[in-house]
Image (cartoon, rainbow, N blue to C red):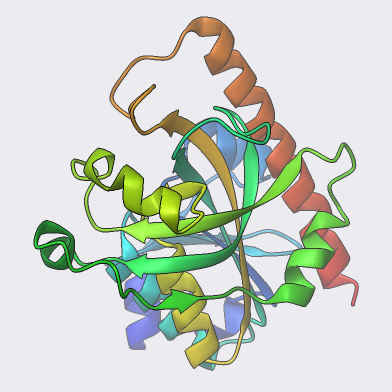
Length: 239
């Protein structure tokens, strides 16, 4: 049994051309993606459908970045992250439930650097532009917006850096995208992310309960995003 088998619960040769990586996977999401059960490895859980491999990575850049690196010796060509993000502030129609594709991510990943205010010179990493355009082409209702992202090493200190985010033109904050873009480029794979907004940093923080109406709108948008990804992965499998 190889290292990959142990860590992922699948063999390297089982991995599909397109992989969807999710930090967390709810049961309803799993069913909507057409997957009954994930095979559990030591670090990750994974399963195949006809058009893609789904991998649950856990939260954070270290886990997701390593998962991407382990895909180097597999048949994977396209890597998509599907997960949540926070909104810096309401603008340009962005709100809770909005779907966004990051055009870049500032790599403010280090908790220690964030703590000591060493985030002004963070490197910026980019997704694969052709893959983004192919994904947007599958957005039938034109619900997905392009956005600027920061991958940030602290939930608590997000609110303290709002002025910095604003000066950088950042729209959303997440915990994985910079690692996705950096690691995928390192192994020479195409990568993009599709994120859904679950909170607004100061106005509606991540720990605050959502009103039933807003929660219903969020669920609707997540389901729309899943359906879009299913169409997208089908199109990729036919190429």
